[in-house]
Length: 151
Image (cartoon, rainbow, N blue to C red; front, side, top):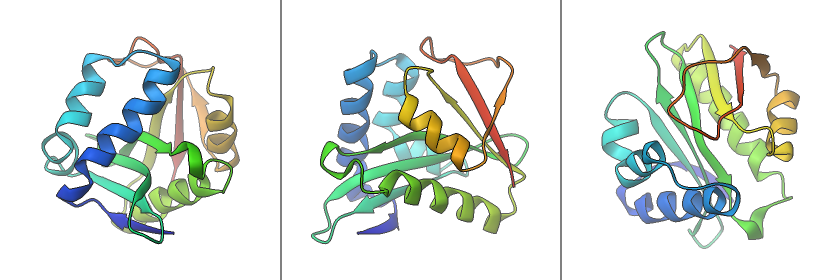
């Protein structure tokens, strides 16, 4: 397994990996469709990054985005791991890669929005040092947890 920078060949996997987990728990919202349908235009071109986890055969088995924020920080978006790769520690590796990448760039913080029903994700975020924030403005109806990590 390796974590690589997004290339256009990853666009279908970026979309399918995220649609799979979102559809399993929630509904795809307009803000999801926008980012999943145009990862270069909505994430990378405005100063963000997308990291893709590939298996030994080069198949995408996980992903995460770092969406640039006005304060120089990044919002962690669309982090997921394929069903087959769950329980392997890949989610932790992806989050560690986000933290290292953002710190190397000099970002002051990472921010994320999630849902309280996603207990494994919340456990990971808290274990990695994220702390809860008060309610924030969000385009997502499903969001009921806001967190940040100061770098």
